[in-house]
Length: 179
Image 1 (cartoon, helix red, strand yellow):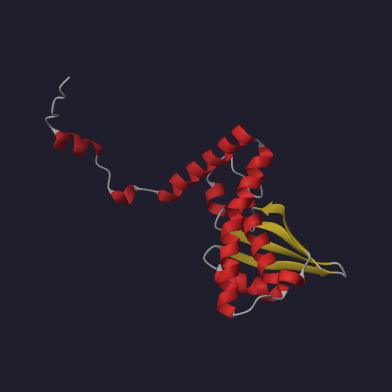
Image 2 (tube, rainbow, N blue to C red):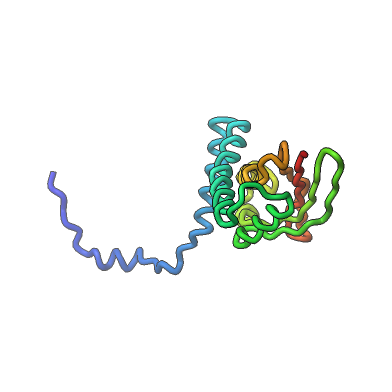
């Protein structure tokens, strides 16, 4: 079978033309992200989804920790020193404020307001919720970054979502560093 040459490509191109300025990459990313999260959930289940998202954050967390260690020529940092350096290095992606610090002989707990790069995309997607599955990316990122930066200064690090504060437009989270 021989294909016929389409006669009026120019007319067709005029009908389908779309200036590149109309492309909304962020919206496309939001749609794909929502679909990815729920497709993995449907196929592999909740535990696999949470584990995968956590591990997605681990890789970049290791990279930032390595970069900070090289930049500061230092292997171990103190908790508040690491927090300050991380926030300076990541100012394009995170804005945090400390609400409270609690310390006892076994741990330091820091309660923070966190506005992160995922906040806007999550807000635009009906199925994605603040503090839920997709936020595991941040949990993996920060837990491993702190673990690498703090070394033997802590035994364990936990980052937990406490609540979404719509009025202040932040997630309230706790960072727990076990001594």
